[in-house]
Image (cartoon, rainbow, N blue to C red; front, top):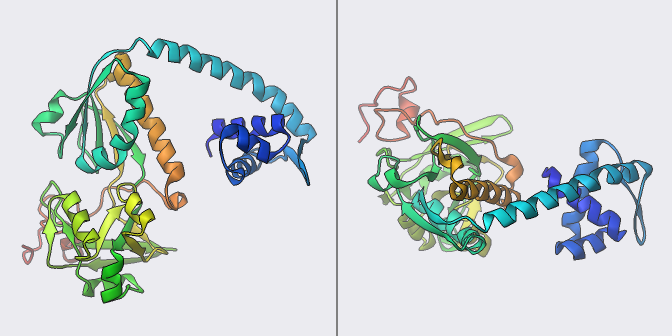
Length: 340
């Protein structure tokens, strides 16, 4: 629960005398206001409002809580205004490095907001695949997928790693949808080769303590995630995608998820990384704060986010494997001699 936002909704509801009035003031839906106020009541273990046919009224506990909360919110608003005035003076070039899919699907849709708020800051975005890429050396802030080995950086996992098994409506209409994970072995799966050269041909699932691992294959593989996305949209086969970087296609119906009662494991987390000295520069500090706020927004907006859990390094992510599915045949981590 976003406690600060819940307090804002609570105070607005108290001032308006109804959830509907608070929703109009905040520019939100009535269910959104109700949901967070109820979550706040559950968190406190106390009822803050009496629900009436024409609105709400504070309980005794609610009135006391409002009296305590309002000054805190007013002080925080004043601090925000003061910080906003200081931010107007921030200027200079800000070098950012991001993996291609994060740059395209996460950062760029939101970056105009940051630039509008800070017109004197020039953003130099470097699209990189690995921290060892030459362009990454110039950056102070990084947005990365996976499990980066970066001892010289501060790394903050941002989560948002829920994955889906998807295909186009055309593909499912022709080939049918799998009812259980094992049926994916008979489908034409579109495979990605990651920057370490590992072919990601292992789909792993978990549901209520039950696990399933499926070695998949197909006619097509690539080392470019956007090419893989284009192939899936064209109906060429089944793919596994991070929800965050494919949500626009899921919502439009261009990609249809299957096996949604299972958690798809092995998806890489999103990480914010920065040099230890980055927070000393106002412009980089502002971007770090912006990315953290953006991650919180995306998590609230994410599909089925309650099932998200920070993933650990997959067991197939070991030196010597050329295929993720080799882990099924070589559980001790040794190279499977039969792999390509």
